[in-house]
Image 1 (cartoon, rainbow, N blue to C red):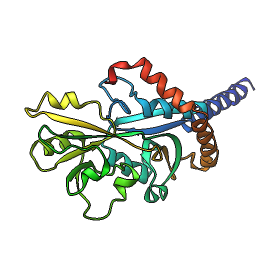
Image 2: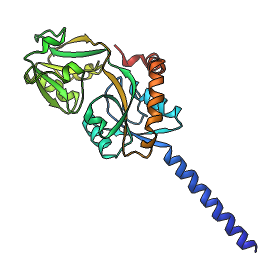
Image 3: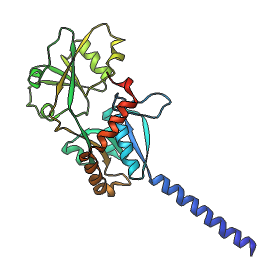
Image 4: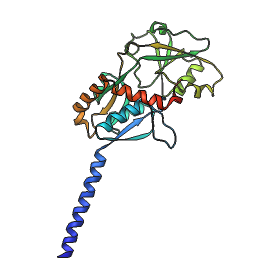
Length: 257
């Protein structure tokens, strides 16, 4: 009788432990990350940080989830992993019909400026029309802003590269006229390995290019997307995300000019 009682207790204990483990697993989401300071900063042996990561972590923590990060990947690889359902989330995406086919998008911010880099004797970029007829290096799979993404064919030529290092290499080699980026602050790291000087131009945007957290439609929590959408819109409107990102900037001043 005692043996039977012990066996019953053992079964209950194992079942409880399994349920706890499953519950913890269901509350963990995998986020694909790309080193792109100050938005996503991936350093050896350290938990990824950055503006996008701070906003995304805060959002899902508020919903009761924890975030597990991948190793550093290129943006286009992260996009492919999200589409294939190999990760749950990405952050820092602009809206696009193609992306909504495989992901739910939750707003958290907006673009207010873009940076353009040219060689020392290159053209000045003060407004969008200055790009006409130029060759522009852009990251593969990355949206920029509406006017740029929807420019008429032939207005300028896009030269796709896998990362910012490649972008500056083709700029230095004269294969493109300009590199476009979202306030990329890691330029100094590339300057160290290059003999040429670059000029940076900043063009202000109208704030209509919204930034989103993307949730794969194959994620185990995809059915909660309507709830996530409602919360993200409320947080965006009441500047809750803005405050989270502002706090990150205050705590990590070394990542800003």
